[in-house]
Image (cartoon, rainbow, N blue to C red; front, top):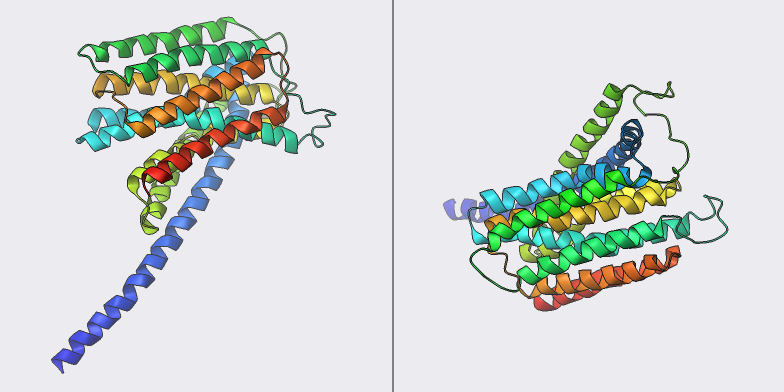
Length: 356
């Protein structure tokens, strides 16, 4: 009798394990979708609030995108890098911060720019446009790419060599970002991108109070940060449920997840016909990713790259050179932004091959 009871318990346990795994996968998928929806809704409130904040602070459209919007959406990712490299107790934990500092720019330079190009192409009729041209300050965007490229090349070069006083160079990256912000604030746009939509928290007035603007922008940013943490966590849980390597998830999927707010901001602005703000948000976020998280990682880690990080740096450089040449011509077609996404595909294939 005792044997039968034990056998029955073992059989019941074997049956319950697949059921528990299925429930775990369903819960992770549900939280994944809910957090993605929360990020999108919060981004709607954030872009609306940050536009009003830029207007009240007398900043042009480009400076609003490159400084205010970019700093707000990049802050959670920088905090993740800070926690990983400063409080990480193992080399593997600190390596996550280094990977984030390199993965973010690759995602922005490939997927985010391609999303802008695809959204402009898709919404051409709704925006009542007869062409596919990207209506931005091409000279200014080309200059942003040149700034990023110069900093990024130094950043990658430091990852290829080791020397004792490397951590001190982190200060140079912080100073480079400060100089970039100062230049963006001084340079004003010659024209604005149309009328602002009413503030969502105070739609009945043409000039909302600063307290309402700060409340909406800050509240939306808090929701974005919280939902992004849940989103990334569920992505890791889904990877675990499907027996994907944690290193594979960290290299391929986590950077896409952490850059989701910038990508969604750009998508929302493009749907409104404001590609200047969309591309300014991406280029400003790239500058933050090239400097602040990198400085933190250089301060606290050896900052020495393995093969995937080197490949990531090379592909990001290729993407930026392509974008710089595109904007430098002074005329960019939305469809010409699409090919850069293939570079992320190349990186994905390389990582999958390494882990095969």
